[in-house]
Length: 179
Image (cartoon, rainbow, N blue to C red; front, side, top):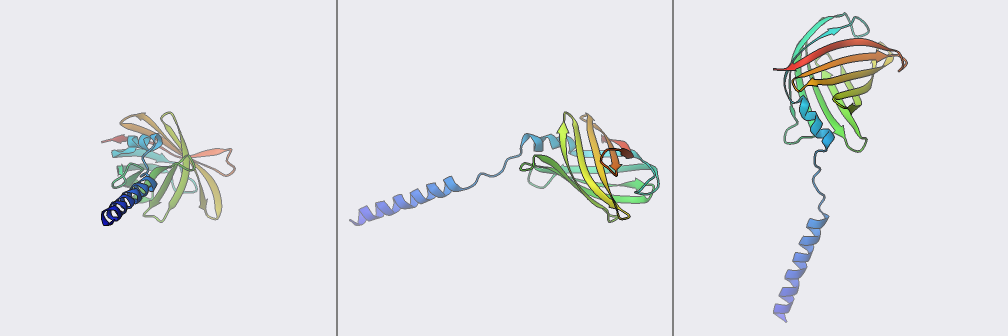
């Protein structure tokens, strides 16, 4: 009887282990949308033109940027930038990913100037379009940030603002190239 009890005990332990493994959730895997962000990974140098307006004076802007996958995964690309604008030197941090549940790309940005923004977007072909909202001087504007992968080594972008979501005003335009 003792051997039978031991055998039964071993079988119960094995059965529990199989059930535990079967119920363990699968680790999430990057989707095709996540993998598309690989185009952003690398060292970049950019230049652009800021139009005078709600964000300040107009003029030229230049920057360098290092973009890499968030440590240990391929779900989010983290970009650290530094450069100069008509308002002086600036540093920023951007995190771009894809929200599987909402089926939208996400982008969160902060600058050393205190500015922060969140936007959600879509991708059509080689173009990502992000929509967000900014409040400046107590007035809320809708924003549209468009990034097009011109070649694997060059991106073009524009940033627009609108008071009504219909009439858009160009705020910034430029290009960035892999170093």
